[in-house]
Amino acid sequence: MLIRDLARIAMGGLTVNIGRSMLTILGIVIGVASIILIVSVGNGAQRLILSQFEGIGSRVLVIQPGRQPQGPSDFFEFFTDSLKERDVKALTVRGSVPGIVDVAPVVAGNFSVVWRDESKRATTFGATDIFADILDVSTASGEFFTNEDVRQRTSVVVLGYKLNQDIFGDSDAIGQVVKIKNVNFRVGGVLPKKGNVGLLNVDDVAILPYTAAQEYLTGTDYFQEILIRVENEDVMPRVEEDVKNLLRMNHNITDPAKDDFHVMTPADVASRVSTVTGILTAFLTAVAAISLIVGGIGIMNIMLVSVSERTGEIGLRKAIGATNNDILKQFLLEAVILTASGGVIGMILGNTFSYVLSLALSYFLDVSWKFVLPLQAMAVGIFVSTIVGVVFGIYPARRASRLDPVEALRYE
Image (cartoon, rainbow, N blue to C red; front, side, top):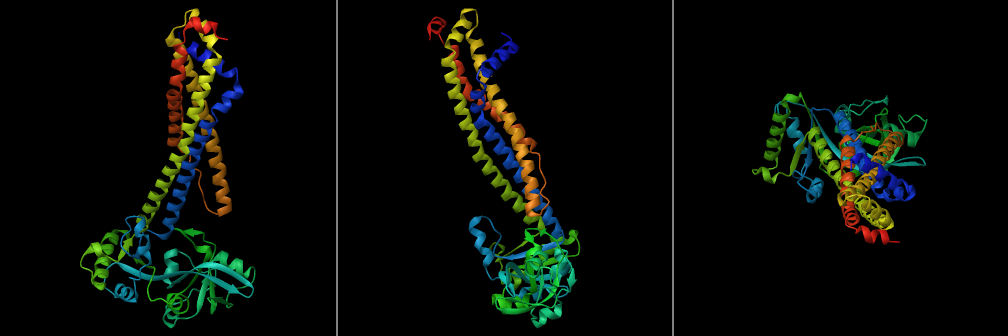
């Protein structure tokens, strides 16, 4: 019998009970839609993060405390106190590392910024005026603090756009005094609306001289990061190696395996983020794929019920000349049509949900979240759903093909 005829008969069998057919493929629809949604959102997040890291610039080296992370157990190495003032002084000595343009130590914290009855928790950075250049921001009003403010431990602070709006509203913040950890700080400047740079939301930060941050807020004598800007991208590898050698000499380290610091470029950070998001997306996709297995089991059960209900039909077809192979192909084709249809519907729903979600995330998070059409995931979804139809449809199809025509005709 021709495939065309078998397909017509199979479609006729499925449309007899269209409601049951739709419920049967529900697991396949959910599985494929979930996979496409997860992959699309994961790729969108990855592109967003990578585009934000481009804002840091390709000429910036980031020195962080602790050894180079190799796994989750190395996470707490970040909180060591290995980067100190002596390292900053060594790096800023002219000629110590040719190619360095600026050095910006960073002290990070999270404190409440209070003005009258208004209070807002904010990420607080102690840094130098070079920090603003690296983030590629300048004040919209007022002025950034100077190197003299850093030397004098001046209690001055620069507020991010949203932080300023949340605390002062339409009032002029310049010259006003806010409290951070019960210490008075004069607002010297306010940043324009910037959004994210890397993983940092610049609109929600408070930036002050790092010496004042250490003296009045953290009570520490070490840094969470040291940012270095180099002359150009060509000298980046050489400067990175020279910085490592200088810090090893400063820390009396002879074995590189015992480094208590690590140096990264924005590309390194972006690569790590890309790896993490890729692993997370793959894990969630594997979880969502369980729905395909559940859906396949459901299809096998329904096909077995269908074989029982259509035993008389099978006997009649065999009586007029249909072979076991014809019956096998018919029921297997029904299973494949069911799962492939579920895959197509899931693909349409998954892309629709992904597009709507990307618009919602762009609106509510105020970021440029791009919708990514996951062509590979779509192809995999259709392929896998078809394979599920074959795998879970073969047993009911074989059972139908092996029915004895005489016994089948007597079945009621």
